[in-house]
Amino acid sequence: MVRFENVGLRYGNGPEVLRDLSFELAPGSFHFLTGPTGAGKSSLLKLLYLSERPSRGLITLFGEPLSKVPREQLPDMRRRIGVVFQDFRLLDHMSVFDNVALPLRIAGQGEKHTREAVSELLEWVGLADKLDALPPTLSGGQKQLVAIARAVITSPQLIIADEPTGNIDRDMSMKIMRLFIELNKQGTTCIVATHDWPLIDKIKRPMLELFEGKLAEASWWLKPDETLEDPA
Ligand SMILES: Nc1ncnc2c1ncn2[C@@H]1O[C@H](COP(=O)(O)OP(=O)(O)OP(=O)(O)O)[C@@H](O)[C@H]1O
Image 1 (tube, rainbow, N blue to C red):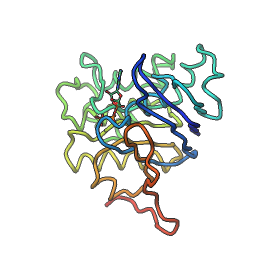
Image 2 (image 1 turned 45 degrees about the horizontal axis):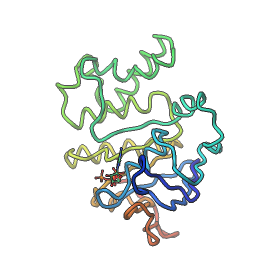
Image 3 (image 1 turned 30 degrees about the horizontal axis):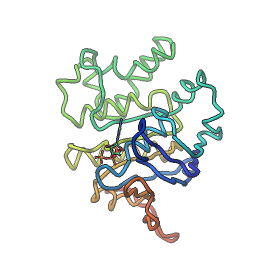
């Protein structure tokens, strides 16, 4: 699904903020991405959702080396990726319904299909009663649920979340993580950047750990005999 080979990233003429990254995310896997502030987590995710290009090394996404994908095909590739941000990035002047519908409308889907898909997803995240609400009237957790519904409405193969539970209370954080786990069980590959150690500890999934732009040698991985349990 994703392969990095000796990838480095620098912004402009600055120093490399990511160095010698080599790893693979198998189709259907779930990984946490951790590391201290400034270690490069968001930068690594930007490479994954095609918002930055590597300064060196090779990234292969969906089996295709990115350096060989023509620029005009990048939007198609981007549509196979759902992204969730810590600050939600909802459009405040649009209703919850319209925010979630937006990716389908941009893709030119018919209104009947869009209505059905949006209703189903808002039911799934537990916001069926908030269709007409404007984002500023929602709690942080509810905004994140809307952002997740919007991220998955195009049925992406890869979900990328950058600190999705930052500033969200514990119960809602668990609910959000359960949604990612449900998506993963349906086959979506997930990578979730977080500092939330209690969540990581509870959910027990493989982890990529960044320190000063490099992957730690001793990232913690599930032992082969350790069973994955659903969070309580
Ligand atoms: N657009 C940019 N231009 C220049 N430097 C940047 C840019 N974005 C990030 N950086 C630098 O890259 C390094 C890694 O930043 P990044 O945001 O990827 O870290 P992070 O691990 O996500 O941090 P945090 O946990 O605080 O969000 C930092 O030194 C940061 O200053």
